[in-house]
Length: 279
Image (cartoon, rainbow, N blue to C red; front, side):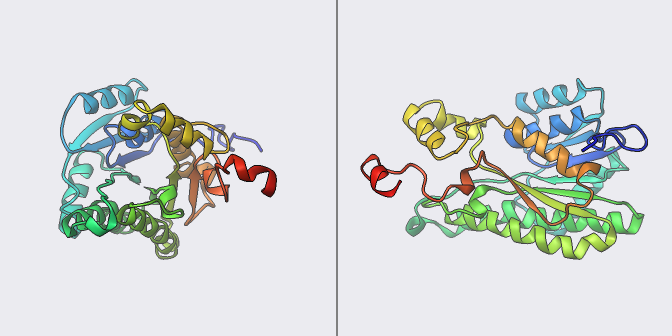
């Protein structure tokens, strides 16, 4: 398949676009922001505060010759008022913003029988309510302006496969997968495209705290991944570029699993005593 358009520009180019990426000062969000910048998009970063990680991500984005700015905000105050205020801040910096990446999220689970209400509700506010109301605010603006907007959610393999004592997190990511499908039906008639990428286990500052300190855990996770890899978050960045680019113009309402095949394996890590019996 050719990767050149009739204009001679790659359909994977994001030149001429501007993106707002939530939770983009580290981890998967930072990888997505830098990948979008590398593809030519101007980028509005978001984080809780201005710190060294935010400065490093801004510098990385700007190194690709695009505009990059940072907005700080707490998205756990989810609701239409928060979303409208954040949209206003973005539009002041990037009036032509046409890409929204709802990446910010949290994991706060403890064993299910011990899970307090506030941890549950905070997880849902950030992981579900914030992307719902931000998408609504941006879509309202785009429909009024006649803009062909593009929305990308960061889901998770946990939206499809359960993990012990991850009930709130798993429920929130399952909600994202369902939301993407429903938003597609609501927004595709307005020329707004909505999709999601769902990482398996990737190396980030959060997961690295465990993977880098416990070789047994890292080896166990490789066993559960058919390609045997635990990549860094850049694999999500390249996927985001594809899903937001013209190359994905006819892809609507889909979740692309970026998991090395983890979700395809029915019975990983078969005990040695059973291998001969079940092979």
